[in-house]
Length: 91
Image (cartoon, rainbow, N blue to C red; front, side):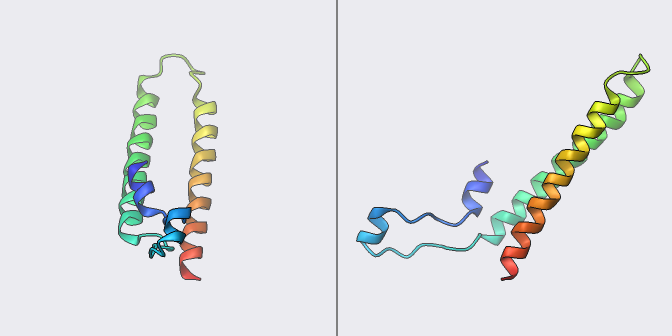
């Protein structure tokens, strides 16, 4: 969350307007790149955990289907967010 906080544009407050301070209004691409690396490494660890859980599962129905559905949902949500951020960067 700290990397996301550093990457996002700064918000204007009353004091910023009063003292006429310059604010960064675009995403910091360096921190955004770090954030994407962290997310992809977390995704890789999660996929590895699911693969290892396949071998460890003893019962036939050990919540595998629910985990695949939930993982697919979060993966789709991540890619939608990623596309929105990168498409807004191109504008």
